[in-house]
Length: 159
Image (cartoon, rainbow, N blue to C red):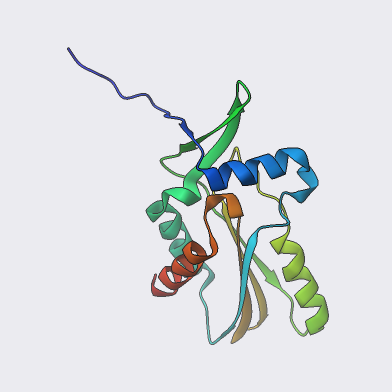
């Protein structure tokens, strides 16, 4: 007798995830307000394709970034996808006012994720010139805690 594994397996959320899910349901406008954002000034030449590949590898290595969420019969559930497309965008900002650039990055940080469609990471590269840029990474807090994000950022720097 052969047993087949279901294409999708859904699981209960952790207590921390349930808390975040509950907050999102009570006040949908709050989704995005608790995202974890990281911005860094990058000096030197940074290849966009290499950055995109590194982030794709990061998502492939970490199930929490490939997890999607739903509610079924009033209960939240999660499922880890085998793969998830990653949103990496590039913007040329040139000599844009630093306050305007900071506002754009801050706006990126609070955009909500669609929890039904991973990946739960976004990356934006704001090019100032060929040798200077700002890299902004955003993670939905339901995917993990602050310690996890620092680990991901460290790993991304290696990739």
